[in-house]
Every structure is written in C-alpha cells, then in structure tokens.
Image 1 (cartoon, rainbow, N blue to C red):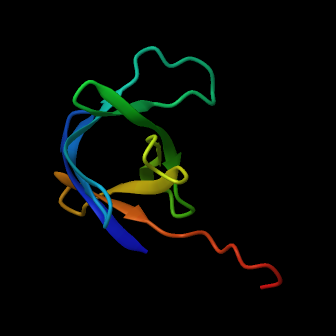
Image 2: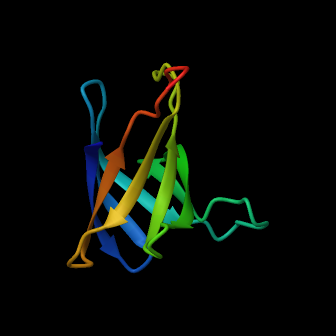
Length: 107
C-alpha cells in the first residue's frame, strides 16, 4: 500500500493533491455529485480545474469505517487507477491509499 495523495476535508468536499512517479496534480477536488441517482451511481466527482478525472463511491470497511473508493482515469494513463480515501484520525484531513491488486495466477 502507498499513500498517493493528501486531502483536507471541508463539509462533504475534499481538496488536495495526488502524486505518483508520473502524476503530480495539485488542486484536486472531490465534490458531492448532486446528480447521482441509482444505487451504483458515484457519490463524488474528482476534478482538477474543469477536467473531471474520476469518480468516487461511498463505502464501508469490514470494521464499519466509512471511506471513498476512487476510480481515476486520464488519457495519459495506461489503465485506470483505483484507490481509497480514508479520513485521518483527527477528522480534518484524509489520505489517498493505493495498492496493486494481486494479479498472479495460482496464488
């Protein structure tokens, strides 16, 4: 697992940055999607400036902790990035955590 972003929470909106070896995006915003309808619709949209780079869904961990599951995509990516945004213990910030799914066969 790796932290690829840090965010501050204001109400239901998050603002921050995402950083990897190939991506450095500041001014990233996760805003509530008021247009959402249906149980599979995302709860948030991920924006950088005016560009929408992803979506997020409200989820709960096995321990009952709420978090956002993100799917980020951009034409420069080889494939979408999936990550989870967890509120920090103080409740004011949040960390975007990425982990590569196990893709080996026979494990």
